[in-house]
Amino acid sequence: MNAHLKQQLGVFSALMVVISAMIGSGVFKKIAPMSDLLHHSGWVLLAWALAGLITLMGSLSNAEVAGIIAKPGGQYVYFQEMYGKVFAFLFGWASFSVIQTATASAVAFIFAESLNNLLNAYHCALPNLPDSIAQITIFHTKDFDLMPFANFGVKSLAMGLVLILSFINYRGIEYGEKIGNILGGTVIIGVLFIIILSFYKGENSDLFSQTTSINNAGLGEEKSFISLFFLAMVAAFWAYEGWNNVGFLAGEIKNPKKNIPIALSFGTLVVIILYLLVNAAFYKVGDVSFFQTIAGQSNTIAAVEAMNKIWIYGGLFISLLILVSTFNSTNNSLMSAPRIYYAMAVDGLFLKSASEIHPKFKTPYKAIVMQMFWCLVLIITGSFDMLTEMLVFVAFIFYGCGAFGVIILRKKMPTTHRPFKVPLYPILPLAFTLFSLVLVINTLIESPGKSCIGLGLVLLGFPIYKMLQRKQ
Image (cartoon, rainbow, N blue to C red):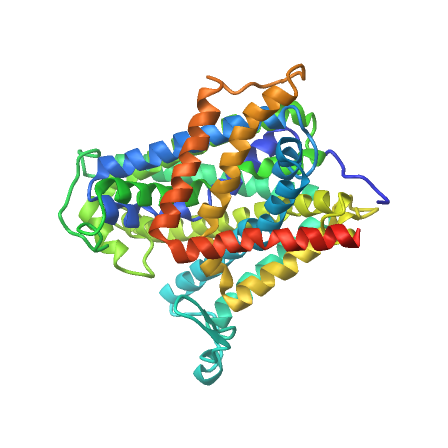
């Protein structure tokens, strides 16, 4: 390495990394399918609250570890101390193949799709290729069709966004920081505006006991209420995904042992409060049956329809806010994740060139470029759509191991100073570990095919690790 990462980010920027990573498009969309699953506003809000509480348990557990291990790579480095290099590599491999890149690709695609929908509303649209080319299928399975030229206008815009944001973060983390701070603050203000406007103009007085017997999901007779509630929580977890990204940037955060735990704790808490308030605000505007109707319409966004009921420009405002939030969330993923691959390369567990720091810009520029190319592949093939369905499952394998690792490190490093200690130890780490285990097992039972594909991708890391070891 011919240069070092530059400690650039303060506590506010670290806090905005946590918030920006989580607030994408999920909070504006998930109320519709969750309403369709549970048929009751109180249960939907409880699902958001419990998913947030469980996320907070994981975040607080992660904060304790971040307070004693402040190195670039976040959980990759934590797992080395907890379980050794092999398990750490599996996390890094899963991040590159599924967790981080699929997230960035999916959110970039949602940005492009949202812009296209907005243009359609004004009788414009992104150009597409002729049907004779768009319908070319290179690979076909029961669950997935590889059609690289389908929906090419949206894909091109999503790829363009990844290219632009990768170039910006290549040039220096301070640029990604400014985007995150400005757009993250804009999103928070926008969400607060939605909450205030909805409670002021909404006509529903009953927020917690709205109910309906309509069942668009068609699952009521096949699954128990517990299974349905669990599915609703998994939908909420997609909106909470990304809280751990700030740890990847430990090499570029000032006083990381203090600031990362603060950012994790307060950032997650802020998002939980915003999510609960905005979903309650949606029920102030529309009842459960209203959102169930939306759930049956594939290209309709719940928040847009809700805001259209109370303000002539409400749908446009939400559409613009989704563009800002998905742009910002894509930037967050592309900025933070390359630090994992950089840390792996330093250890000889990734392509060696990924360990190089740009002498002028002080960024892991080759790791950023490698990530960019893989994201472009996922977007053009459309494979990110399949990968995101197994993303929560794969992520919670590592989240659970990370929480249990708090207990391991208490045993291995008993005398190490901990600037932050997880409250109610060991109850919180154990509770989060247990829930993660239940979620993983439940997903294996309910969706064995996609779960096995996700697990197979993770386990594919074993032969790759052996190959890298022999090469080293």
